[in-house]
Image (cartoon, rainbow, N blue to C red; front, side):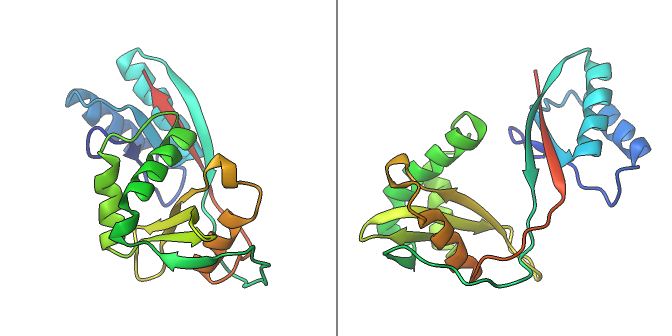
Amino acid sequence: MTPPYKLQIASLNDKSTQAIVLLASELHKGDWHVPTVIAVEEIAKHFESEWNRLTRGQSEYGMRQRIYELRVMEHHDYPSGSFRQATMDDLNCAATWENSFHVGCFGSSIAEEPSEVARSMIENGYLYFWEDPLPVSMVGFTRPTKRGVSISYVYTPPEFRKKGYASAVVASLQTGLGEREGVLHAIHRFE
């Protein structure tokens, strides 16, 4: 966790109760502000309980998320338009849509200046558009590793929704839609 961002907890199993107690205790002793925790559901609940006990605070359940793994390539019928990598000419559009993505997903704008995040994604080649003929949907990837990437920033403005653009841009980035299996995650927000 780098303030003001969310605390993300990774664990090989959901039985790491002593580690969670130690983590919560050390964060509390260090007077850390923990606005949100993201973790596998059992870990998030355990941290929530321990953090609320230490701070005498309250929290609320945020949202459930999944992690998907592409295993099988399937045929996809694409709408009109085409897939392309974003360029610096797309910066204003990308920054606006990225901010709208965050508002839609999390209820608030991102902490960083949206244009800086969008600029970095474009410069690194991580952001793509579906255009018909102008951009109508966006997708990005983050956290590239030797074994995969995280697909994110999937956004289609309301006026272009329900036309298959988001599916097309994601499928193009993944080179096809696959079977979806994932691990349930939870987000808890703290007051």
